[in-house]
Image (tube, rainbow, N blue to C red):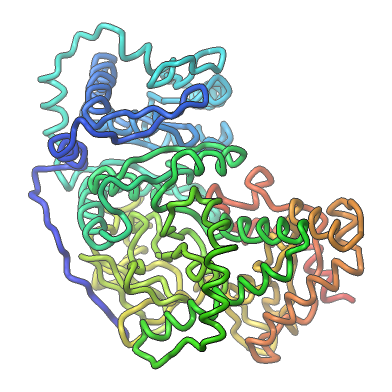
Length: 613
C-alpha cells in the first residue's frame, strides 16, 4: 500500500472560524484593495475595510429578518462580487451558506431548499428569483428572496449592486455588538456551508463543510503556494462560486493578500483579463484547450499556422527538459533548440501571454484531467499550468504541484496537513484538513464514504511516484471491462482524443463488448475555423458528423491515442455525434466536466450501432 503525508504548516485555535480570514486581512491592510468591481465598463477598488463594513451591515439585515444561529441561507447566482459579500455576511450572522448553481432547474432548487432547510435565498436577478419562487411553490413553504440586481436588471453605478445596496441602507434593529457575538460564536468545528453534489446517481447529497475546512486550507495552501498566491497579486475568478474549488481559492486569496476580481461571462473574459492583468488564474482544462485552438486558428488565418506549430513544439521540448531536471534526470538543451526558443520568446510567446493580460505567470488547473502536451506548451510559453486534485468532499485542493516543484502529468503532492493513500485496488484515499464532516442527514452515505482508518474513499484510482507525487489514472466505477476481460481506464484515451483540434468531448464505450469504441462530439467554433481553412465552407454539426474529411481528421486523433496503448485497449470504431454537449443539454457540469452516465444513457442507440456495423 502506497502512502504519503505532508505535515501541516499552520494550526488554528478551536474558537476561531473562517471569518477570521477577513478580519486578519483588514487588520493587516484594511485600506488596500481586496476586490476589483466593474461598473459601466470601469473597474473600481473595494478595500478590505469597505468590504467588512458592508458585510456587517448585510449581516444585520439577515439577523433583523430573523435568521437564527446555524440558519441556512442559499445563494443562486453567477460568479460576482455580491456572491462573496453575501456568503461572508451569512457567516457573520452565524448562518450556513448553501450555494446553488444558477443553471439549476426549479425542481433541483426545491430539493436543495427542502433538504437543507434554507428559507432565505439571495438570487442574482429577476429570472433566478422566478425559479426560486417556482421551487418555493413546489415546496409549499414561504421563502424570502433578495435580489442582487434591480427589478429591471440594472446595476446603475452602485457597489454593491442595486439589490444589495437597498438592503444595506435599510434601518435595522440589530447593532454591531450582536453581529460580533454571532460571528464569534462559531467554532472551527461548526458547519460553514452545505455544498450539494451533482447527483448523477440519485438525489444530490449535501456535503457539510466546516469552518476548519476553509480556514485551515486557506492558511496552509497560501503558505504552501506562496510563489503563486503572492501578496498584492491580482486574480480574476470566473469559475462558479457555487463550486467549492473557487470558494476555497477565494478564501485563500482573502487570507493571503491577493486582490480579487470576478468575471461572469465567457463573452467578456478576454476583455476582463486584459483590464485586470491577473498574476495567476484558476481555471479548468477546457479553457486552456480553447485558448490554444483559437491561437492556432488565428495564426492560420494570417498564414502563420506552420510557424505557430513550430513554436508550440519548441515550447513543449523546452518544458520537457525542465520537467526532466525537476525529476533529477540529466537533460541539456541543444543549441538549435535554445536558438529557436529565444526567437519565439520574442515574437510569438508574448502574444499568447497577452491573451491572459500579459502578467499571468501561473494558472491553477483543476476539476478534470489536464493534457500533458497542453501543460508543456503553456509552461514553455511562459505560463505555468499548475495542476491539482481534489473533490467537493475534500474542500477541493487535496494535492497540488508547486511553482518550483512541478511534475507535469501528476497532480502534485498532498497539501500540508493531508495524507494520500493508495488502496490495494488502486483507489485514492484521503485524510486531512480539507476532508468534510459528512453528508447532511445521511449517516449511511457518510459511513460508506470512509474506510476503517478514517480515510475518505474518492472513487478515483491513481499511483504515487517515488517522491510522493500523485497521478490520477481514472475513475474506479468508470473502468471498462470488455467481453474479453480486458480492463480499460477511459480517462487517458479520452483526454488525448479531446485534445484534437475540432473535438469537444470523447466518451469511450465497451463494457461487456468485444472491443473499445468511442462517441465524439465536435467543437462548433473550432469546426467553423477548421472547415474554412480546409476550403469546406460552412457546415452544421449534423453535416460535419457525416463529412469524410471530418471523419478522417477525428481518426487521426484516435490513431495518436491508440499509439499509446495495446491493441486490446485501442479504440476500434467511433461515431461523430451530430450534437454538442453543453451544460444546458445536461451533459456537462458547471465546471465543464462530462456527465458520463448521462451521455451513455442519452446516446445508447449510437453506442449500440457501433457494434452492429
